[in-house]
Image (cartoon, rainbow, N blue to C red):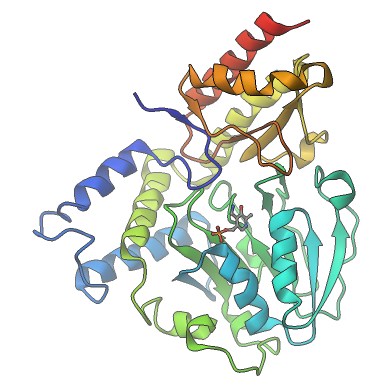
Length: 362
Ligand code: PMP
């Protein structure tokens, strides 16, 4: 029986996609060659990568003047690649969690970093508000979804300087006004595919702007290498890109686009949030509902029940629930509810919580 997969990433993928990609791992569209065996310079792969890019553009309504590239090294490599390419003197960062901190740490290797605001005073359990974006910086970096802490910036705001976001854990989970961003990047392994490929959407104007540094950049770490070669400068992760294309096809044909996806994700989050907000045993770690992520919902046991956390994890396993142990920086539990997680899995989680609460309430 298939489990209820709440993993934070790599994460749940649509079953129909898993079926298609496993067939193609034996034989791609009846050509007698596995997708794992095709050349990245073949006409078959050309069609795959181009369709993936076209669907990504269509689904997120990406305006003219943006490039999409597929690179390796995870979002963590982007933490360094971004400042290497674009940080001339100073950059601004919003500190909303461990990934945001790691991004800023890499930027410090290349220039001055101004932390515009931080929610570190309350263990990143909220999104800082009312901060001022400096105008004397090369770019402003945010992390739209904070995977570990369960907070999310759900609106695309205006920035006086190029706005760059790490969207690793809410990529393609809702419509995004891409025109507000100079660059969006993310690892694929949460919402859009398997581990092994990282996607960057970069505005041409940014690529050709005064922000581009004149430092010597290794070829593979230069964005232009990849934009100019349509991600084919070297051997790209062919299979991972193939899976991304299938996920994009699923988003378009089975889900019907990102408006629908957002609605489905909101419905899923509501099921768990409604329960959490009324529970006498579990409590969400992000008090402000506005800031609560639709992708990762974090919660702990209320004080009198803290010692029951391990028992609840055990209990949840009986329902086929996996991946809900919280990150060590928050403790408790984290339910990652990415695009492909069925709402029924969330209902099963709530049922497990209700039954546990009923049996153990003091
Ligand atoms: N940013 C965010 C928001 C993440 O959630 C993660 C991974 N969990 C990363 C960056 C790091 O990604 P990768 O493992 O692909 O380097």
